[in-house]
Length: 292
Image 1: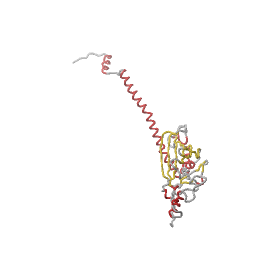
Image 2: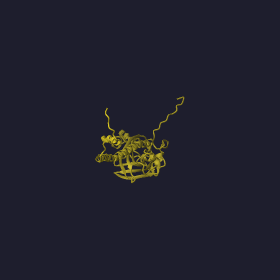
Image 3: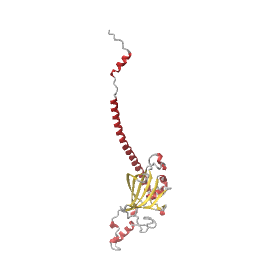
Image 4: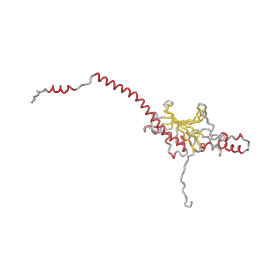
């Protein structure tokens, strides 16, 4: 039998530590350097990631707001209150109607302090004349606080920090008529071709002097109705609107065709600006009588 000598406690503790090794200061410095490089890379990418998140959030907000405004314009303002759009007064700050003549903007009306949704829809639905061209046209420009977003920014709260965008609305008459279809002066007076084209001309062209409102208000029956029955509705969004009035690089455009009559009931006005409305396409079920 082999007998081992007694090992003092202190010696046994030292023996157990013989296989253990610690990091040197050089190794620790290298590890900190590697972590530092990684943090620098992460911090450098973080702002870009936050900008991408902000851009996605703003794009989503515009995508949600655009269909609401298109539907409000399409459904007309005479029934706006029934659709519960008076809350738009908390979000639409101003609407300015411009005339663009070869890039030179002329203010036709400037409006703010809205009380009802009908006023907002009526101004946004301001139409362009039949003589519209790429260098001469009319549009309505609205400054809007986003309807979506954080709850603290809803109902007009936090007006300084709320996301605001610019919305340009064009209501363009969609005229798909061949030039010869209305050129009655090219034919002999009283001939069938003259009469047919003359009648078509009256259906296409509005009254020459629809004073005091611009066309197509007060157009006699049969004049302009053919041209003013289909419209190209264009909404161009630009964002963000900065406190100094400048607009950022964000852009989105939405378009829709509206087949409806566009009128200004009894020359409705808001602060001197005419209000326009599409006739809504409303359908109801009619009760059938027992003897029918």
